[in-house]
Length: 519
Image 1 (tube, helix red, strand yellow):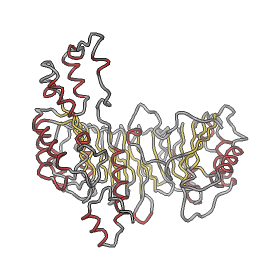
Image 2 (cartoon, one colour; image 1 turned 60 degrees about the vertical axis):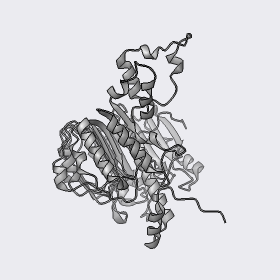
Image 3 (cartoon, helix red, strand yellow; image 1 turned 90 degrees about the vertical axis):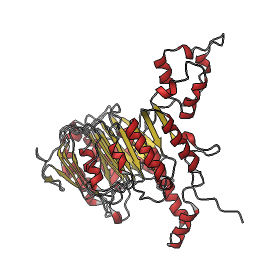
Image 4 (cartoon, helix red, strand yellow; image 1 turned 45 degrees about the vertical axis):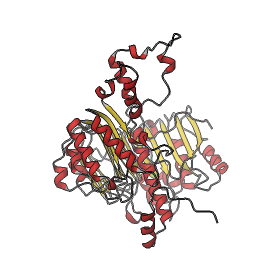
């Protein structure tokens, strides 16, 4: 009998412990591997050259060394974009390069220090010792400052003294962009409080840690921090509020995998984008955020399969893009709780929102009944994106008569120019919505329908296509470009891409298609 493949994340001791507790270690290993894949996909990019050789640009026909003749600042810029081992090796090129690495702000990514024969991401069999030894040697040798340090390949629980030393060096020599990811298990390794005293940070991402106590967070000082990411970090209610309060120029806040129950009370003069994904959310309150432009809540749920309890929008006059709002969530606008059929007033409207994304279970009547009410709360919408979500216990589809009786919705009639429906399978509730929308939207320019991936969600694609085509026969807009696209991703769509959501040069963070196929 063939020998079973080794675990990717679990070491033999952790696998044995899981088995003794009655858990399937292979299932746990797959879960840990998926968790790490989500974390790695959520990390920011680092400013390194992709690795091609310089020989073509560096030498002329006479083989003269032209790069060495470049001004010192340009050569330092070249060194700063090389993987750390290559950057250090430039010291042997010539006397012109000898001191450049030590005088250039350090860029250190420990994924480039993996032992020979070990690809990224590392597995449990990857020996962390040479990686941590190399990191220690580099940090001790370089005088600073450290431009970018990403440490994502080591099991930090086994190297706590080294980690403590690194954090002291970061605080003493100055680091701007810091990413610290602990390889599981365990999942609750305490994060040293020293990290909250590194005042030079402009970007900080933490993955798979347990935040220290409230006293340490109250002493945090991040006067230059502009971007904060907390990825599968164990924390107590109020911890994020403390960090935001001590980051006076923070613009981007990303949270992934908060499983304890997130209660967020946002008070910030600088925040522009807040993104929360795959988390147990209990209460998200935007109390006072005068610069907030994007609020993106993706994959929110509660233990036992329930939905997010409450989303409250108070003072957010610049909020431009909002999603993925679920009709079953409790939405409170200022002091008004939005209920089905409630009459929209000036105090219950968010007139700044131009882009809205909804996650709707068309097989659940109460979800669909909330859609007209929600649309009326955002009277200035230009773009509407809907994610159709399957449900375990459907309560029936509402007929076209429901949409007729809902009456005209002003933004649908005269404002919305782009509409997308994702994870479409042709179920009656989806088709009824499309018929209503197409017959009402007079200024619609682009309609995008993305079918579910039939590998994950069985349905008859040709039948769904015909239903979508028929629903658009009596379109109010005669100049609308209609597009029918098939998904190749997982059920429910891809995991939220923090980079896209926080990229302000992308005007619509919910519209994922730039090349459209006409149908």
